Amino acid sequence: MRVVVAMSGGVDSAVAAARCVRAGHELIGISLRLARDGSGSCCSLDDFHDARAVADRLGFPHYVFDFTDVFEREVVRPFVAEYLAGRTPNPCARCNEHVKFGLLRQRARELGAARLATGHYARIGVDPESGGPRLRTAADAAKDQTYFLFALTHGDLERTLFPVGALTKAEVRAEARALGLPVAEKPDSMEVCFVPAGDAAGFVERRAAPEALRAGAVVDEAGREIGRHRGIHRFTVGQRRGLGVAGGPRRYVKTIDAATGTVTAVAAGALGASGLVAREVTWAAGRPPAPGTPVAVRIRHRHTPVPAHVVPVSPAEVRVRFDRPGPAVTPGQAAVFYRGDLVLGGGWIAEAIQ
Image (cartoon, rainbow, N blue to C red):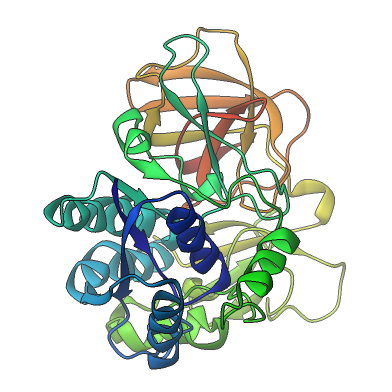
């Protein structure tokens, strides 16, 4: 079977490729040039050289495709717009949906490939109702990436391979060493790939029109001004540092009002929410769970899923009520719904329910 493997130049995609070769697949390696200026942690010449070295070692062809235009349109511009709107974007999930499992899958089909393989930490299980494929969490809970993959449909999963999803990170590195792969010790990249040194605020300032950078007041729970700030794009819900508030109790960002430029900062005890509203929701089964069905919802990549109940408002919008007092809810992030280790679906957080 012909398989296209997405190669980032890192150890995970390298071992994914090696496993595909060992399974007897005819492999084609593809790396993507995404960021135009190469100032972030992706798309460097070193990454492409590393991917090519792995392909040469394993004996399959490797190509680099320029996807900068679609990446700019579908990921970078929305990233900037979300910060200017007072929300905190999730570019990795957007990239997976529109680029890696969108345009790249199309390119794989054009190359005659039956499957697209990636180095994501995720597994493909079986839907207990339909018997079809269902996204399943990885064996290594600390590396699980299903939060970023919630938009994958049954059709996507039928044409996808996650060769390292059943391994721990330590096992992946050990396998890379045993195979003599040149990226076995290459460090992981943890930041947004196109933002230099994690400087999201600076990136937004360089890309936005000056009049779009809305400064304003920092206020307390009662609406009293306790500080000033230089732009709402510098804040995210739950943030403690950099509030520009001198003295008084320790405070955290609770809400960001883009219309007025107001940032509300509260004590830790007032930070949590009782639920959320999610929009652009997709369900793996094509429909939401039956009313009253208990689920667990993850509202940040590193957060433990919270027990909750989902109430559909429309086919693409739900209200979620946490079963116990929940964490701070960040508009712009994804809300991903789980039952055990199966992903039920997910959507984009529009607002918190207090």
